[in-house]
Length: 114
Image (cartoon, rainbow, N blue to C red; front, top):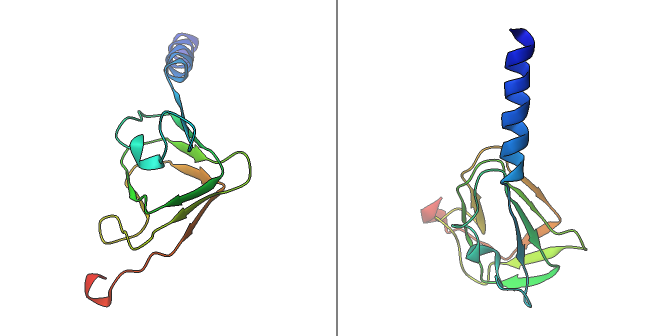
């Protein structure tokens, strides 16, 4: 019985990974800024962001188990006066989110907001 349960768990884990998508973001891609895919990603997906500067693009990641990364240098997110939820450039509301190769700058929250 122990091996049966382990086998079922393995199949479910592998099949779940098969449904994960990779979303590509960059100036020359279908999705030009990260916020374009924030509402489209599903649990376990990966978001690959091209290096470069993304000015004024803020938002909230609500999905669990995301990998968000820039694999070639750094993607620089410059707030340019914008802020998500009066908290920052990105607000991560999902659990188990891994972020790599992303720089953030220029975000300021007023003292009245927090």
